[in-house]
Image (cartoon, rainbow, N blue to C red; front, top):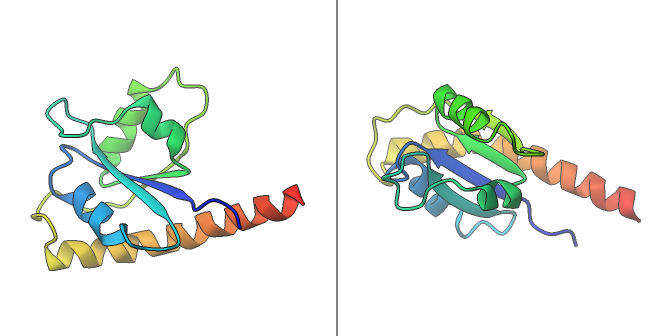
Length: 124
């Protein structure tokens, strides 16, 4: 069985949205997840180690993707970065936020799992 795909959730300050995403998928047997923020005030700030770990990065806003691409422009290989378009209007584990995260994340999970299964077949 191939290793579980790694999904990195990113928001501005790692306070509401990305921790909610991490908590939502923490016990999902299909994936491993982490949550980070882009601000220096984030409890957990995005690092090169996080990007090396991730198979896919799910950011909450377009600006987050631009900031990552700019900040890590010298990084050899960045994982795929997808924008979920979830505004910073919710508190931690807000029911509507959880629903938005789930609806935005599920097709990315299926896509990543499909890529991992394809890689496993190619290695045989």
